[in-house]
Image (cartoon, rainbow, N blue to C red; front, top):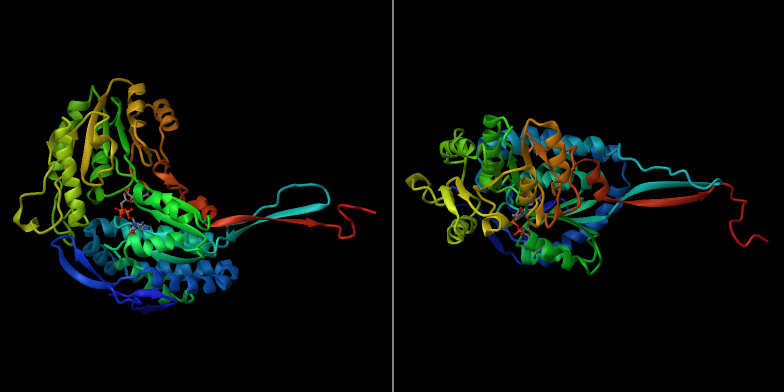
Length: 487
Ligand code: NAD
């Protein structure tokens, strides 16, 4: 297991030799200690990245692509180890890590490996006598900051397009969950990425993260995390006016219409909120039910939620693991108290499970709360296995409830009426809308939000645009023609 910083192709101790303990949230036992990067380590990493980027940015795009493809193969070859590591570090059930996190990580590196030599500039038809071509240039050194909820997958979402486009990277994983990002760095070294092109600096947000966001030689900062930190990133970026991309919080509405296929809507809605213990920015955390089907739906949904198997995430049968930290568990439980205080009704859960085998871990029972649309739990992101329920009478009311938040990230609709589906998809304030499904992602489809969920997009061609800037080159085709002051 790698526990040191990865700078200029080597695993090295941090300058101040600080340490961060990494815990297993299943029982809060210590997995290891890692080196803690601080501002001076970030500075060093940026220096090496700046040097490496000069040749990486001018290198053969197909060569960059080939390295990403090799990395995807290496991820697959080491899948089982990555699954176990991610599960111990985050609490993700291994069954999810095996089915989703690791394959999606490999798929993302592979997609952008293929993209590297296919992302083209263009040639606008301009004035006669001129050729104008527009190339896509790498931004330079990119700072990337990721959260703890999907550390491995988000590492690939951030790294893959940036590298395909010819940028060098300094990435800061979350202090709670640095282990799989460090393992990916090791695999990158093995498959032959040049030294300095990727640097990993695990450390705290207010030190290492803040330095990366303000660093004058970092030309872009790509951040995934909370809206509050996103605001700080924007402020820190002002010094050199670096490009900023923000993937922030969400409060996804998940609307079930009276014409929905109820069993599919029940299963899909449970997945929307309970997968990864609800620690997902796109989680369908607000169930919005048509009053005609609300009772039937809730009865089936509650029964399903009760049947979810909580347990050790390393066991194959476990469907729900612990939250990723004690502090976060307390935060989620606190929201149950807030809901009650504001007149909400806890229909299920709202507490830690009373099971001896889970007592040391950061568990929260699947929680269902009936709450008014303006209640705190319907407005603030809880980021746990915690779903609110409200009801509506007609489509206008459903839409008003859906759009009654400051966020706009994921959203879901369950209906068999085609025109209703398209109309709602058009009107809903969200970066992503799932119809009769939820949480489907693909490296080819843009991912990101509107409003206080941030700006910029990951995945697909959009991500390549985010990690490049257009350079417009004007060529006067007849060098003899003097364009101005002709005498
Ligand atoms: P967070 O904002 O506390 O931390 C995210 C990262 O930012 C961590 O690496 C942290 O160390 C770093 N950080 C903290 N303070 C910083 C500072 N001042 N300067 C620079 N970096 C700093 O968020 P979190 O609690 O770790 O993650 C959960 C949040 O992430 C939720 O709000 C969730 O919705 C959001 N999220 C968004 C998306 C998306 O794609 N939109 C995806 C996943 C998670």
